[in-house]
Amino acid sequence: MCNCVRAEELLAPNFNQREPWKAYILELLTTALAKAPAAEPDQWRWVDTRMNQDRAFAMLRAGRDLDIYWSMTSMAREQGVIPVRIPLMKGLLGCRLMIIRKDSVERFAQVKTMADLKRISIGQGLDWPDTAINLAAGLHVVTSSSYETLVRMLTAKRFDGIALGANEVDEELAKQGDADLTIEKTFAIAYPAPVFFFVSPKKKALAERIEKGLRLMMEDGTFNAIFDRRWSKSLIANNMKHRLVFHIPNPLLSPQTAEMIRRHPEYFLFPPALPEK
Image (cartoon, helix red, strand yellow):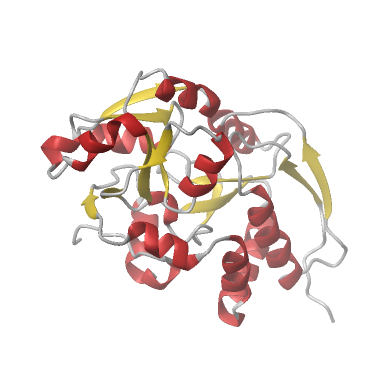
């Protein structure tokens, strides 16, 4: 007899603010669900509402209009939803490099200490967990409610640089097509910041299927194959070479996520540093 879970209609976001890796995430999701199939084919319905991250989590918690979302995690975001604690981006959003103006290159090259770093102003999204992480470390953060506005603020010299994941910066710079912007080459800011799938509390069976499928993908190499098609590990490694790395803590991590990081460094391309328990 088949003990498969019965398929349900799945409500997923059709738009996730500043989401250049949506196709990659959806390939992971659909492959995971295929490896842990329901009795009937999954029925997807795309929620075509533009939403910021805070609104998406409110919808998930209410169990209305959205069944699944993907985002960098935090203790607050894990409350009232079901986090699937397998890092979808191999932790790369916590390895932050900077897009800066070319007229700032020499100034950034002088950043050698945390005190120097604190004199640099960093542009971040208002509802990004990174904002709270950077502020907790004493860094100078300037926020905007939209990514597009952040880029305009950078060119207008409202702050010194935008901090993005090591897997994002090259594509983001190319997308802007601005000859006056470049990637800062001398340092990185690193903190543990995995991206998870989050599932509505009304969809426990869905969360279990996703976790089972992702684990099977990691065992059979499918996960790495999808990752490697999307990003060049050699490009990411070259981006990280010869940099001074400022490790800062992430006070937003839940104890459960911190324990996952300690137990599974193999989930990460660059295993993050955590304080001893």
